Image (cartoon, rainbow, N blue to C red; front, top):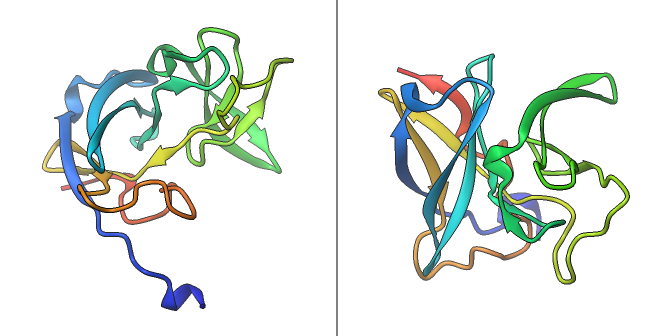
Length: 157
């Protein structure tokens, strides 16, 4: 099977809030559908205008706190990437990909990955929307939803 043969995920776009209520360089939590369940998502508005979303659950502290993390940036292979540091134990995550950049001497709780799940985000007519997998579709199949699928966080009229 090639990439072209891989089944395409169908996304449902869920409105979570008006863009103007998201403070720049701060996070907010949203509850969105994830297949048949609901999941907490941390949504961040960056100074460059992008809006990105990662899981709200901190895999190191086992608490839903990442929207309260410290937003910053870090040089990764010569590229400045937006980050969030957990407010609990200060692990640093790439907001674009969810990759843990700094485990800060801890291990994730048993059964959890050190990396965060990400969601596609788009802004349409001033409303932030998160791309979710509709009910009945496997939300946790091979390859989690990562930034770069339609809904790249860019603000569009």
